[in-house]
Image (cartoon, rainbow, N blue to C red; front, side):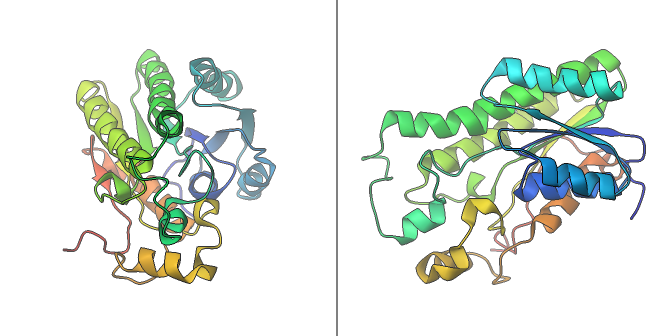
Length: 265
């Protein structure tokens, strides 16, 4: 346990499970108090935060609602007096729920662009792009008002750079998160507010639960993962910690890939 975020306050969307939860816990271990925004209850996350010796609160948050995003940041300020770090981790793989890799492995073409319904495509963009933008905007406005800088971290994906047949909504949305990160990083570069992104590869989270028991899906994922294993949420959280801490103080507008070697070629 270190003190890289000692005295900091971190707001994390999607913090009830997966990468968001692992990041909340790691940040708490490094000294931060935690504010979780999620549609799902985050009681387990808060128990782990408190076990790490820090305080945490949760607020039911739909990131597609700008009012919810603003309320989440306001709750952080009301409880802790400020916001130093934000992690936009809330996201979905598909409008229907199953992960992209499992849908693709089933050999179905219903999710190809020529067959996909507009509302299905739109739903993923609403959550993964608009939701991240509204989260970032609320965080940045507060950080600018404070005048003390801050770090915003967006969870993108290696799919921001790898086209996956049958996963257009997800790939396009994560590419959008990447570009949003670059634009906001540029816009805020002189303010002390840094904006970076993390693009994980295939990671053992609820989003791809059961993939190891689905042989075609697992083999498809491993075919583009040279390390030949799934990432752990804690490994993604460690990358988020680097971007949240002063160790990355000269970095903004960047996308880092803890992805098992997917971009070695």
